[in-house]
Length: 509
Ligand SMILES: Nc1ncnc2c1ncn2[C@@H]1O[C@H](COP(=O)(O)OP(=O)(O)OP(=O)(O)O)[C@@H](O)[C@H]1O
Ligand SMILES: [Mg+2]
Ligand SMILES: [Zn+2]
Image 1 (cartoon, helix red, strand yellow):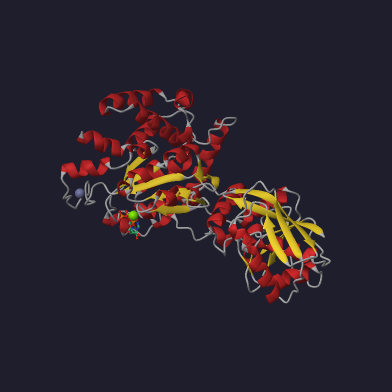
Image 2: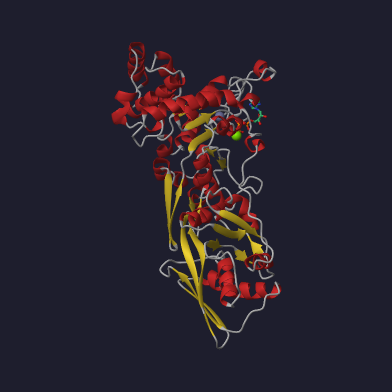
């Protein structure tokens, strides 16, 4: 007897339909799996036989051959278990309902349970694309997969439950589609918690509005981490498509929060300088997403930037530019999106007190220069806004008045993003941070006073051509926040003030 059951395979973020074909003939009992299945798939046999026994399901003595098609694609992992088990049930002559337009995936345990798998959302999406109407998957993955439109999702707790459903004895209830409650959007840290620091908040607003990468330089305890953490709360609300993409990556990495099966808040991913290159950009055997992909559609925060290993930072160059990363390993290559905002923080010198209004810096001039020069130039080149964060005064910290809230700032940011959307319609540019040099003259038009100002400053500060380009882009965003068609003097002077690292280098050279 021959039959086939639908499943889905996954490599990186690439899902593909798999058919589990099964053939049984009378003869010596055996159980073979073919179709480029690696050892982890081969182990499925033991799990399935044991799970069936422990669920009180009879296993018939027969020669079973299972073929996973397309046979040309490598298959790994335990997620084919549920489809193989269903195929065995079907070929044993059981009259099963609900298998034709259904797909099955999930790991079966020896005791008969069904364990969660990584990447269930991506697999459910793929099933839907291939005309599948019902997906049977581990119960723990059901809420995550339920957001896929056009497929009904059935969360399976154990083999007995699936068996009863397929025999029409006791049906599993389909998972109701998950919709995030209002609470899912709340409880984000808010900018109104930060006293003073108005200039830093303004810089962060500009960064958020124009998708500019930013670095904050300041002594310990001035609130750099506190400020960075609040950036996601002022970025535009995630679209459903963005939520799905980020959830897919978090699911594949196994970091999806059970209580929040759909990511609706932009991620904030702090990375320590001890992170490995694989941890940062992704890697290991079957390429897993790294921090840059976990930060997709959100913020990647590099704290203590000068402490990072240069080579680790070098690996950021391509992905920052391309907004996706391809990780090649012996097992194949995986592609993950990584469209993130880069926010970095650092102390101004080894002791941290350089430039502090009250505390004394004990570092030698040479030590400060050496410290600053540790920052990788390729990374610095991709950061439009550099800002100094100074300690807040007693008056500010003791003031109980709440500052601008994140909701207020977000409203401005969203308006500025809309202006950019209109401006770049029909191009592949998404924000002011991506304006190519050739378009700067056309897009960043300054009024007379602004032009005069930048002309003076350019020579006086010995500004580089690259720094000039950045000033224009940032000034463009400042003008968009003001809904001004032309860049004025205020916008230019603000953008110039965001070159504090450059100034530090210049003043010391
Ligand atoms: N402007 C502020 N308003 C309210 N609280 C603040 C402010 N600045 C700092 N704090 C308080 O100080 C704590 C330390 O700030 P934070 O960790 O953000 O400093 P940091 O600049 O990142 O320091 P480090 O360089 O050591 O990493 C915060 O958790 C917060 O409680
Ligand atoms: Mg900090
Ligand atoms: Zn110092």
